[in-house]
Image 1 (cartoon, helix red, strand yellow):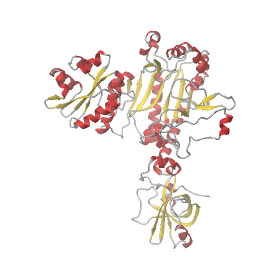
Image 2 (image 1 turned 90 degrees about the vertical axis):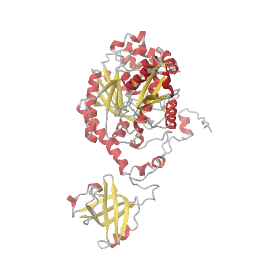
Image 3 (image 1 turned 120 degrees about the horizontal axis):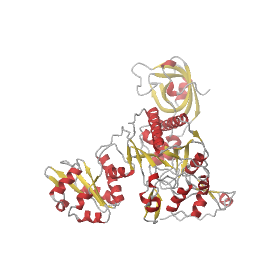
Length: 590
């Protein structure tokens, strides 16, 4: 038997008992002939003592122990001497007096200390991920991940959902991100695609009469990476039949309330606030707003239209918008700091950033000469300006205004320490547009995906004014993070075909890519809808970390590389020959 107890689970209840423990040498200390080892396993640390008076042989063995050696010890549980207790450890009142030691495996000197407080570069951590995963703080992320997974599964099981698998090798379809392709040896020249989500299959399960489905599922997207994106990621995927949007939001709200409470003892406000997509954009410049702080955007189109400021008026004449926000207590910023804000705005697509400082005598800035005193007062009141505030303005196309001011709002929220990291503020965003127009490709694109159902009252607009059609779609946002998104699905074949047509998908392409769905919709498809939550994002949010790489056991870098295994890598030419693939080495840019 390698152990009778976990290291971190020994308590005073085991006093005078003989126990056997196995784990890693965390720290080693020699004190006056007595050797102390902090022994570590998944459950924590315990101090073990090698005393020559108990066993000279074992004490001599202990001299050879080094960091990360794997050992087994047997000994009696004893109280630490008074005054030597360690209150930071759950085992801090006791220690193990060792009578037997077995070195199970030595270790090379690790490239970094397995210490929570040790700062290590991310590249080194990912190269030696098996060592990084030994760190207690890192392991806590994965204990949290496990607990969250179990809590979600339990809630869905209790609410009549069936867990079902969907294929990893499936058909490549247009729309969405780029697919990862897998060549088929048995069908030369053809390819599978790894699923970006189980969207079509979960709809097929509803058509099949499963009524309620869920899956904690791996998904794949070949897209540029960032802190909240990985090429392979996990989502909580679910679908329900014979439901409307309100039923889905109500049930999912209950799930989030329950699992956040169970896993992290968080009491979220209920019911969750709701904003339409347009309200979120108008007030926060984002469809995933962080509502833990103010600095809301204000519309200034009417005031700008009555001013003599040609820059604003020209934008309005071209159908653009003028909006502003109040950077509280930022009038003290230097001209250089304001220039930095302007640079940030321009990096987001703005042509510039206008500003006014609020003083005791009114608004001050070079552009105030273009505004009559009564208009300046209207601006101050609209933006709730007080002495010491800095008022910022952007005039441009609507989306540029939202992008720029939404980004500046977040930057200022952090700069001004307005964001309370201990607060969790959920929000439902609803009534998304069904479509947008891609000016580059000169065609309509789906805001969520091609299977979201239009609002019933907007169906006539599919023919006359498709950009005004709203989708029965919704996102759950927490602290500015999009945790999940879903919709009521199209369950009638003729509407689905019409949406494909609006997206520029020809009948031939629709039949080729989605023929199985279009046919299935003709065999009594029930009304249905669902949602998918980003599981990695949810764990990261609850763990209080910025990047989902911290909560994925073996993540990729921003270039999609696994530093531990050196994947992706070359393969044997024979493998390529079997797949009928001819390799042409890409020429890397200098």
